[in-house]
Image 1 (cartoon, rainbow, N blue to C red):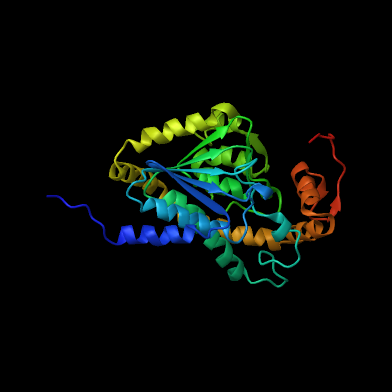
Image 2: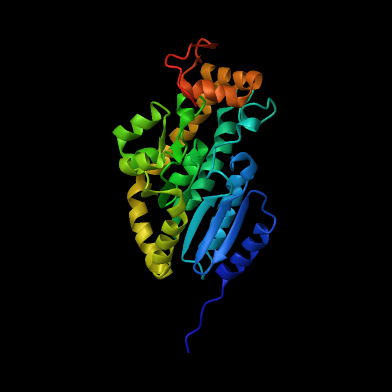
Amino acid sequence: MRRRATGPPYLFVQASRQREDIMRTIKTEKDGRIGRIILNRPEVMNAIDDDLPRELQAAVEAFDTDRDVHVMVLSGAGKAFCAGYDLAHYAQDPENKITQDMPWDPMQDYQFMWANTQCFMSLFRAMKPVIAKVHGFAVAGGSDIALCCDMVVMEDTAQIGYMPARVWGCPTTAMWVYRLGPERAKRMLLTGDKISGTEAAEMGLVLKAVPADELDAEVNALAARMASVPINQLAMNKMVINQTLEATITQTQRLATVFDGITRHSPEGLNFKARSETVGWKQAVKERDRGLYDWTRDHPLNDPDRRAD
């Protein structure tokens, strides 16, 4: 008679589920062979705070060691997938850990951001496939989370981009170049533009874009198809593909994380932080994304084309 192993992985799953019971920023649901992870700060469009990265990693690890789950689906509660880091705290609030008084300690900043990056990379490193279901926005740090997943299916009108590339940020997961190649990655990161799900699919950044009323069905069909494959087959094929990137990705992410800290403590980064504290983060982001502010000279510019919201 063959026995089913019930060793440490089973015990680990039990412990992880106990931790999930007290999670503040993440919800999980088990749907047959599909493990669903939901970013759960809908009141702020699932903006990233101090807890979300670690709770996300715990949820991924729990499903990754659950013998019944074959595939994971990551989504966001409310109006968006994820609007990036919570700038009401990190940019507008003078009392936060992401920007230090000058002179700053680069390794303190690196330690904080590197830990978050590795939490997001748990999606990439999980043995089982992870599908990101994106609606609304996956921008700034939210794009880091989405692009660490194995596949991204977007609502066609949803927006994705890394606007902090204009000032006060560098994408620490560095997934843009691995998905797009150097020229198109430069197109996105040297402008900080957002693009629609349709444009992202055409560019090859994401797998597919569909109308909002088809998003759930599209993702569920893809997840169900993968869920019919044995876990070991899924794990081996994902590992073979990922290893082609792993030779360089850690070095790239270390450089990106160091640069991310520098962008927040450069003269322009400090000006953005001060501006956020003075006029509020929403106004500062508007000025950044529309090109309405000279961050080097620290004064507003006229809007050249009066673009609407």
